[in-house]
Length: 319
Ligand code: BYC
Image (tube, rainbow, N blue to C red; front, side, top):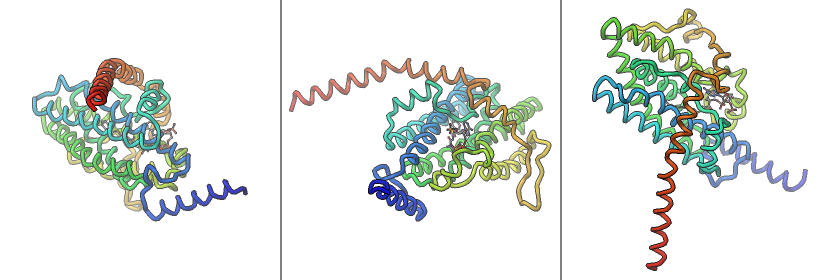
């Protein structure tokens, strides 16, 4: 082993010891290149999910059933935009630029959560997204609050607080509809039927098929496995559905006394793979909307840069 290899091994051993001692890794600390790349992949995909996730809900802003509902939905969607910006900034600390991240999203190279490739067909879908999708996001993100990378872990703490308001607003919509007219109850049930399985897919492939899990768990980027988080979500959500008087669309769903958890049916992994590959119901529409928004905003970015240059120029001349 030459001196450079030996130094690298020592750095890696010290890094792993730090992670295992629950000390946070900060941007200027030494880190293995693959750790940095894994974080860039996961954090940028998380950021993309937040801003693409604004689209299905934005679809209902102009048709919210009351001023109050509209105001709440607008605040929620703005929060998602904020989460995206927060996460892009945190990812930039790893040495990738925002332009590069946008390029990866717009070219289809970077993934974003499969869930946002499903359409929002009626108002109850907004309730189902808040209740189920934000509920699943919190389950995943609470674990990420203890991620080994400092900027990501800190971002998650604030984001989880806001997600918890989002989950409650969704459950409140579902409650109102479940207690409403027969048609409203049917809409709520229909939304649950369509969003249940895609929500379970948010947690990713089963542990046995999760390519990145073992290394990410060792580095304490991920703190709980995909299957453990999915189980946690199911266990928490079934009683909530019962309270609403709605039925989860899974005939294999049953409490298992021995395991102390709910058993549930198999996810349609073919559907999951198709959506992740870009062939879901709304993949093309979502990506096009992001590209159009980026192109349409070019004049704003140009104007901001021109203004900053003018100000700097004036300051230099005055000095
Ligand atoms: N969709 O080895 P695995 C929100 C990919 S937004 C698409 O287990 P990993 C909200 C995975 O990327 C919250 N792709 O991966 C916003 C990998 O492919 P690559 C979004 C998926 O990373 C607006 C491959 O499959 N939350 O809350 O160890 C309105 C193998 O998987 C998915 C986050 O982004 C999927 N569902 O674990 C409302 C959380 N699942 O990258 C709400 C942060 C897997 O190797 N991310 N893939 O090509 C994570 O916690 C982890 O990345 C995952 C996957 C658990 C998702």
